[in-house]
Amino acid sequence: MGYILSFLLGLMVGLMVLGWQRSRFNSRSKQMLQNLHPNFLEGSHGDAPTQLSLALIQRQKHQKELEISRKDLEARLAYHLRVLEAAPFGYLQIDDENRLVWCNTEARSLLCIRQPPLPHTRLLLELVRSYELDQLADQTRKANRPCQTDWVFYPVSQDPMQLSRQDAQLLRGYGFPMFDQNVGIFLESRAETEMLKQQRDRWASDVAHELKTPLTSIRLVAETLQSRVEPGLRGWVDRLVNETVRLSTLVQDLLDLAQLDRNLPHDLKRKPVNLVELVRSAWINLEPLAQKKNLKFNYDGPESLIFEVDEPRLYRVLVNLLDNGIKYSPPWGVIQARLHYQNAEEANQSPWLVIDVIDTGTGFDENDLPFIFERFYKADRSRAQALPAQPRPPETMPPAQADSEASSGGQNRTSTGLGLAIVRQIVEAHHGTVCARNHPEAGGAWLTVTLPPVN
Image (cartoon, rainbow, N blue to C red; front, side):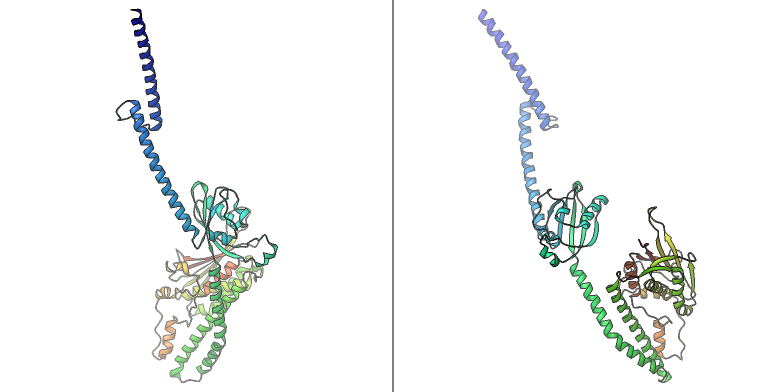
C-alpha cells in the first residue's frame, strides 16, 4: 500500500512539473511568436508550438523573398553603375561630409583623378583641387534643389615637368540632392561648345572685314548717282542707298561684337561719370530720328549721379536702348529714362545702379522675351505689325522709293538684330545684368540695366 501511495505521489509531482514546464514552454513560444509576428496570433488556431512552427515557416519564406529582392536590387544597381561608367558625361556621388563616394571614368578624366577612390576615405578637395566643385555640392545640399555652375578647372599635376602641359578645362556642373544629405553631380565639358562659339565669332568677324570695303565703295557710287539719275529712277537709287546703309550697319555691329569679345572685360577703363549728362547726350544724338515721329523724352531721376563706368561703352548701351525705344514707339509717343539706386540686400553693401528705358509701343511678345538679347534675333515683325499705319506715300513717288519707305515705317531705318546683343555684352563686362519685360502701365517695352558698384 505504501508503494502505491509513493507511486501516485511521484506521478502527481511529475505531472505537476510536466504541466509547469509545458505552461512555461507555451508562454515562451507565445513570446517568441509575438516577437516573430505580432499579428500572427490573431485569427490563428492550434497551440503555441504549432503556431510557432507556422510562424517560422512563414518567416523563412519572407526571408527568401527579401533575399530575392536584395539580389534584384543589387543587379539593378550594378546595371545602373555600368551605364554611368560608360556614360559620355562625368558623374560623382558625394556624401554628407563632402567625401567622394564614387565617380565614373569620364569624371576621373575631366578632373584628372588617377585612381578610383575607395568609399568614404578621401575628401573631395583632397582628390580634386576645385573649390567651385566643392561649393556646388554645399550649395545643392543647402538649397535642397538642383543647382548649376560653370567654372574653369585648372588641373594640378604632381610632376613639375607637366605643369606647362596641363590644359584648363571649361566645365559645367549640375548638382542634385540625394538621400542622407548625399549629392550627385553631373559634369559636362564645355570646351567643344566654346570652340564652336569662337569659330562662329571668328567667321563672322572675318566676313565683316571682307564686306566692309566693297560696301563702302557701293555706297559711295550709289550716293554719287542719286543726283545724276532721272527723277523716275531716283527711287531705285534711294532704295539701293538704304539697303547699303543697312548692310554697312550690320557689318559695323559684327565688328563691334568681335572687338567686345576680344577685349572685354579686360579692356574696360572705368572712371567717375555723370550718368545724367551721359543719358541726355545719348538722347541729343538720336533726337533727329525722334523728331520725325514727334516723340517726347522724359527723364526721371536725380539731377546728378556719379558712377564709375567705362564711359564710351556705357554711352553705346544708352544709345542702343534709346534707339530701340524710338524704333518701336508710335508717333507722338513718349520715351522715358530713369536712373536710381537699388536697395542693397545687406546694410554693409553698396547699392547697385539701375537704368530703365521705357517706350510706349506695343511691347514684346511673351514668346520673344527669352531671346531678346540673342544675336540676330529680331522681334520687329510682331512689334511693327501692331504700330499705327503710316500715311500712304504720294502717287508721284516712284514705286521703288515708296516700297522702301513703307518697309522701314517711313523712317528708312532697319534692325540688324545685334543692338541688344551688344548691350548685354557690355553690361556683363561691367558684371551687371540686363532684362526685358513689358511695362504694366505704359504697355511698351521695359529694358532694365543693373550695374554693381566698383569694389
